Amino acid sequence: MEQGTDLKCYVIPPMDLGWELMPTVQELSGDEEVFDLFLLAVEAAIKAGWTGDLRHYSKPRVIALPNVCKASVAIAWKQDTNGVTFVVSPVELPWLAEWLC
Image 1 (cartoon, rainbow, N blue to C red):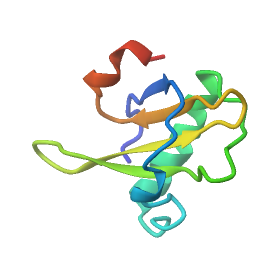
Image 2 (image 1 turned 135 degrees about the vertical axis):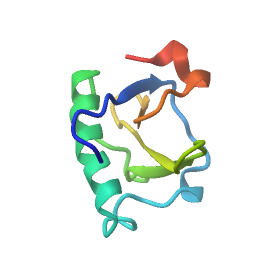
Image 3 (image 1 turned 180 degrees about the vertical axis):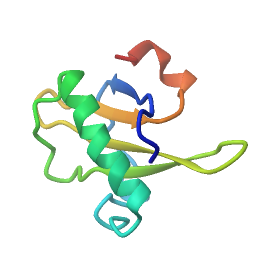
Image 4 (image 1 turned 90 degrees about the horizontal axis):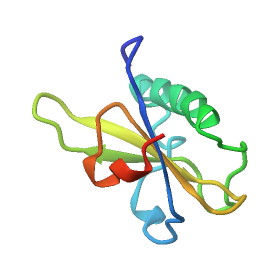
């Protein structure tokens, strides 16, 4: 991940279904770009109000995003406290715009 990437952090209502369809960050931890994005995503989410806890079944997940020039990924996880879902992406996700922090 390039330094200085402007990450977008979305705090969306609880997402309860489909987590098992996405690979975990841990499963892809050998990919340096994914792991670097995860570390930056944690920082962005803390600034957006993440309390640092996770639902027991909600390991941070990787979401593949279509992009014109190259593939992009976002990181998502569900907070245990109040169940909100954090989605952190290097590209804008217009369908989540109302929850951008």
